[in-house]
Image (cartoon, rainbow, N blue to C red; front, side, top):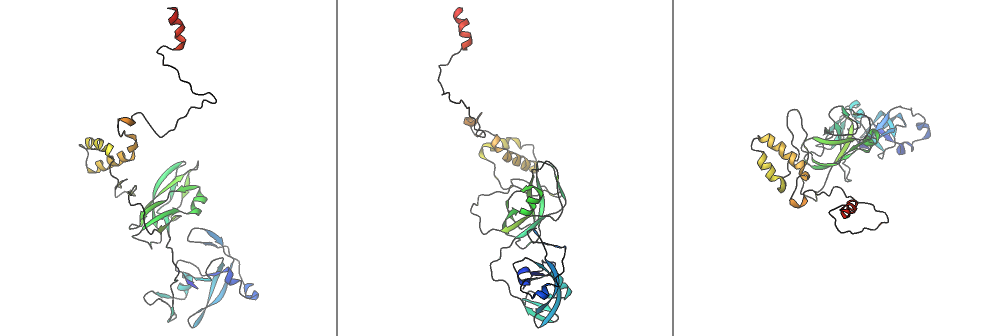
Length: 306
């Protein structure tokens, strides 16, 4: 049996339920509720029934829902509240009816995955990219470097794309970049699980820079905060900041870094680009070489007549 304070109801696994006597299984009552997992996926409950749960020296009757879950039984918050249980972490036990029932932590390696939700309702214009403010719902990995990955349920349901990113979880507030590729507005409601965040063990490439910071009404965020100016645009920056204050200089620096590829690095790349690879299809005709002429061929006849 697993104790889960994040579960709103007590759940019995389908596999364990099928070991019951047929006469007991006939007492199952159908329900219209749906199981919503931590990943946002939904599944139907198979029904509900009352069973007796043996904890410590006593038996407790409680109504449970039946679903296809890996654990035999999940003891939810409904049971804990109804039976007035206390979880004592220091003693690693569950106190119920004056009795301390020992609890044991699962020795298997646990991968901490937190959910990410939105602060408020969001309307995304069609064919647009938006950076929004989101927060970590279950902050159990605070202060660690973590990777954010989109929820498959969220992207498949709404037809949106969400960028992966690496963040530091010192602040529970993080940016999310969402792309609406639909030809109509998309509405995302507050507290919708949009992504998951998981701590990472190590970063192989240490040469990174912050590319985004959430901008709120009370603070001014700067993009490319830790990025340095490339050498070829430093002269432009130095000659242009004489009349700018400190905040304006930061914004101007960010603008230059954002468009750094638009500036020439030397005289050799003026008028050249590698963004487009242009080819001319001549079919089966081989290329030919002709001597240069100052006068077009059409005018040679007139030139000879003169």
